[in-house]
Length: 75
Image (tube, rainbow, N blue to C red):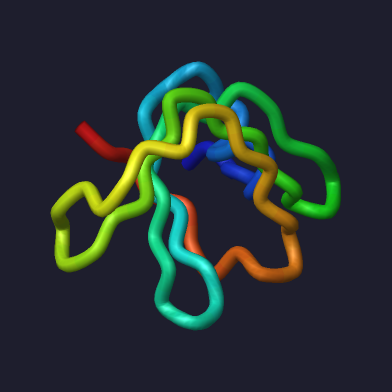
């Protein structure tokens, strides 16, 4: 069995569409272009989602790692 580490999952998400849930229930969808050891994330073509619908486009956004609850693949 191959060991997978959290950074392996983050590396495979680079340059792909992801959904990122934040504390307080806010969700953003976009292309993950960068992250660091603190799980700070930069999304491009980001959109704020409400009830699985686009609320507004925000373009490029920096999400602070201490507010990230989850990162999930998106279509």
